[in-house]
Amino acid sequence: MRQKYYLALTTEEWRLMIESLNNLRNRLISEGKYTDAVDEVLIKVANAKTKRFKITEWRT
Image (cartoon, rainbow, N blue to C red; front, side, top):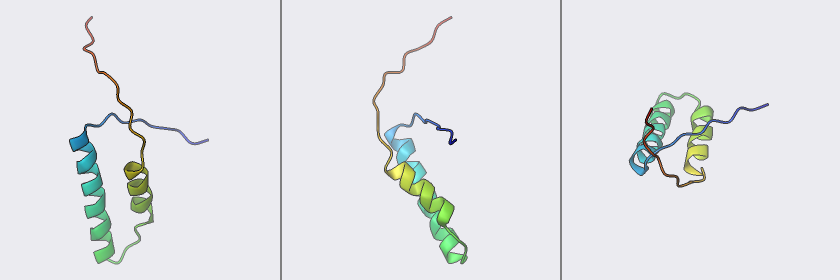
């Protein structure tokens, strides 16, 4: 059974993740290594559904 993980990212964080994965992919290609794992993650992140939610401050 696969375990699901959820990330709460801002637009800027999402853009940085895509850019970083793409840079890693380009580096692997230039080194002649396989990019299968990075490709899968890049596709999943790029096609992920967005959900808006409100973050409230937790007070104890």
